[in-house]
Image 1 (cartoon, chains in turn purple, red):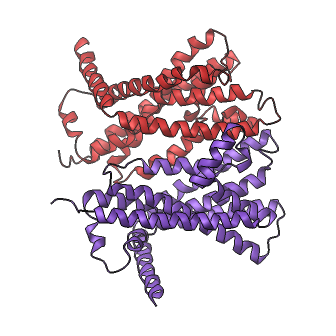
Image 2 (tube, helix red, strand yellow; image 1 turned 180 degrees about the horizontal axis):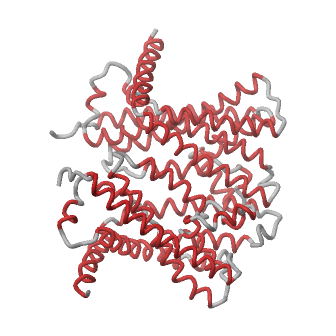
Image 3 (cartoon, chains in turn blue, brown; image 1 turned 30 degrees about the vertical axis):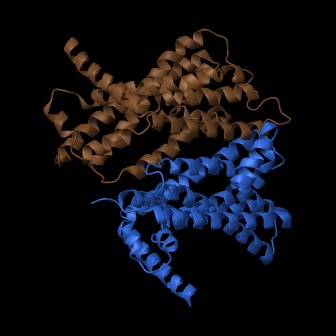
Length: 268
Length: 270
């Protein structure tokens, strides 16, 4: 019952977002192009490097495209469903506009994270998915329905992790008022998620596996689903990813609610 | 003449001061750059695995290219000049320049120069400190003519960078929101200026086409002279011609946009 009610709330917000987007069609077109072009930059990098080499860390061109595509699906979903809400959340806490959310009936974290949809992000999820499908075709993969469902589940876990990490950094605004640069740090982190895990060699193997696989799991977020689609699922990895998603989401909830207690609105 | 220079000298000094104040922006930006460099290193390191060269250059030369690019960026890139200019137009802050005998382009350019001297100097520091560590990764060509060629190439690159940003800023005369234009063009610039990969790795035909676009001269051209990726002196000289053409063309476009824009300008606020 409660779940149904939240779904209805979400749908109402979605309807509002779609109407708003249709009012600013040119803007929508431009921002869709922006995201498409940035994805193009990444695809161009892969194509150019593979003009000169056949494999990177054991990954061939199409495997790499599959990885990059998977990483981009997660990123675009975050952009489409949550980004502008999270970004504005930080600003609202600083300015005191967050009061508006406090007055709403419903889970605050849910209300604050789902108010707006960015359609240009969602449109580009399809573009990223097209890259994955193309790469899978070239690799002559023939995934069963179950494989695809598992792949989507893994991507979902990735989305939860990305969401939670950004949520935690935004929630820091409750403590330190000036917490800018979140945007940049997120995009920098996602750069690491487009690298195959095997590429981390030498000293990076140790440092990177601690920081990016265990502490901030951006690498595993993209590598596990991309591998799963190619070679079938390796259960320990999947369980690890699901566990990480649960862990990060719980942490985000705790940090957000702790921060909330410190919120004292703003003067005037 | 001297009085004119004096005007812009003050703008320059003002730019120096305000940029020394906002050190945190620099620190944040520099940190991201370092992480980016780490990604580049891991990726190319893996690509070079079991190989001695890609496109005729070894790993050290390739990393030298990316490190040079990074340092160069702090010296000549337009960071958010486009945004600042559009804000000044939107808020009506440019109105004061319309009433005074001051050229807005030169005023902004003086500030840009000052800002890049600060950020470039600051960026050079950590590199110099890390030099012993980076030693194995850096391998510059020894020819001295390169220094001679690099200086005008870098200066003209800075002008191209700034003037493109300036033109985008002036779009605020026509559009309320120009952020999407800026980021869109930033994606194109990043790719075609050689920041994602050295442009010479492109298929030959595409590489030739890229040499006629202004982006090539924003970053890749000076970097290729400094790091030895450009070897043919005759070709470099020809490209100097194209670079000079683009500097001129962009200045003319900027001038045209400014005059057309002012006609639409309604001087809101102030």
